[in-house]
Image 1 (cartoon, rainbow, N blue to C red):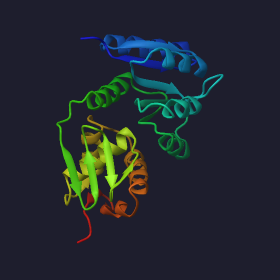
Image 2 (cartoon, rainbow, N blue to C red):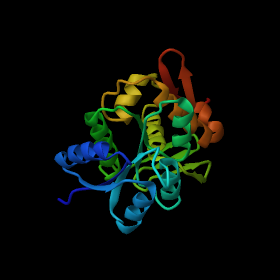
Image 3 (spheres, rainbow, N blue to C red):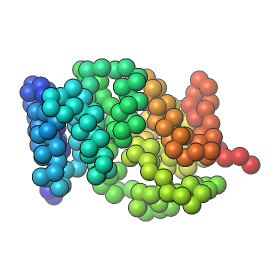
Image 4 (cartoon, rainbow, N blue to C red):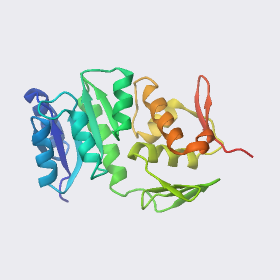
Length: 226
């Protein structure tokens, strides 16, 4: 089986080497870029890139700009690396379509776990099925979502989160349960990641965002109005 190709863009050679070596050991092929322009050149010249790992602060084009340009033409999964951990930066990343946001310093083991979890889903290992609930229609195989007949665009993680909620409608779900199920590995961070994704998902599905009810001190429950 051909190794999946991952583009790693970071202006720090040491970080690129560490990430590259760990990914290669895990069975991936790695392309490296030292700045944003080189990252875009590689992205356009290699049509089979499975996932991008982008540093935010890079010369020529920063990670935000690279993400924006990639998202204009592709839904390939993107993980952002940053030395900053402020909430507004995370919100900006998710607004641009970032799938994961990892603050430096980070665990290589966790990075690879997140990459593997994303690629398993993108690789089409999910069962073929359609989900429907009170005006929300989800086609998992086509990765399409319709709300009252109108198609909406969701990021990869928002799509998976919506599917998980719909599969567990009426059930109170803790944040830990959602993170471990949707992110597909044990997550030891705080709750900001899931809360940010829920906020974006609610906004995108409009009035039906009220179906995602907050259970204070615990998590969420997906339940429509009777």
